[in-house]
Length: 175
Ligand SMILES: *[C@@H]1O[C@H](CO)[C@@H](O)[C@H](O)[C@H]1NC(C)=O
Ligand SMILES: *[C@@H]1O[C@H](CO)[C@@H](O)[C@H](O)[C@H]1NC(C)=O
Ligand SMILES: *[C@@H]1O[C@H](CO)[C@@H](O)[C@H](O)[C@H]1NC(C)=O
Ligand SMILES: *[C@@H]1O[C@H](CO)[C@@H](O)[C@H](O)[C@H]1NC(C)=O
Ligand SMILES: *[C@@H]1O[C@H](CO)[C@@H](O)[C@H](O)[C@H]1NC(C)=O
Ligand SMILES: *[C@@H]1O[C@H](CO)[C@@H](O)[C@H](O)[C@H]1NC(C)=O
View 1: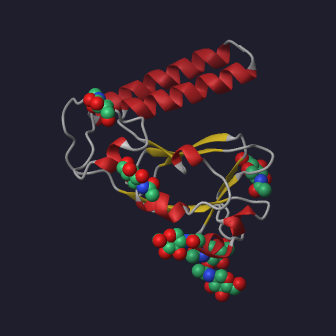
View 2: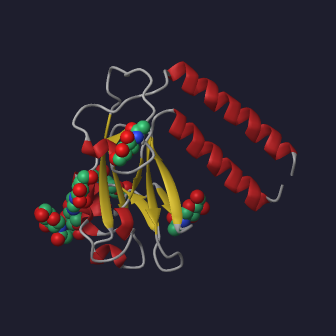
View 3: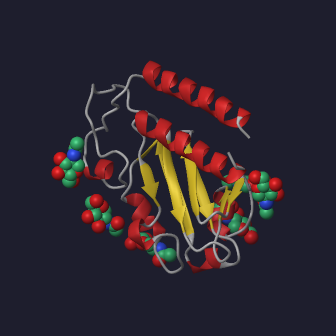
């Protein structure tokens, strides 16, 4: 395997594991993507983020990018509290903590509105049993008022993750 293939393969495994665990991928801005002069507060307020969901940014790389900062950085378009940076043009970022995440664009585009805050809630206490869902789409969960279905119990999700790890091991050995 080439390293590019390996990266794609790992990304595929990450997304598969997230999907099996019932996570939602929240595509920032929906079909508008990550671009200047969009009010991302409106988009974000229309989403319900849960722990283990993904937030993904789609944009023209080399022009835009994504930095995770803290509230000071978000409010003021600075790199305060810098916690991560992405620039692939199609970035999937796991939301693993029940907290508010803040993302901004560099190159001055934060001042043109390219900033988004995601308030991530803890998992709902009860996991509803088997419901094949449209959970990979960004709007399915936001549209429903009740907590989302969590199709698989945590143990199964963990098993799936273990398989993923085993496969990554095999993949690495093949380089
Ligand atoms: C985005 O929309 C919200 C709600 O209408 C508004 O309060 C906020 O000021 C807007 N933000 C910008 C940057 O226009
Ligand atoms: C909010 O979500 C609803 C249902 O998915 C959608 O119809 C509406 O356009 C969304 N509004 C915004 C501002 O994204
Ligand atoms: C934004 O920056 C100003 C100074 O540049 C600072 O006083 C203020 O506290 C910052 N905002 C937040 C939310 O920290
Ligand atoms: C953000 O990070 C900066 C620099 O590390 C720090 O001074 C500031 O207090 C932080 N702001 C918040 C809201 O945590
Ligand atoms: C971006 O993240 C990489 C590690 O993922 C780090 O080496 C690099 O310094 C970061 N760049 C900035 C501008 O923070
Ligand atoms: C997926 O969503 C579509 C339209 O929103 C709906 O017709 C369909 O029944 C859904 N499928 C499942 C498995 O929930």
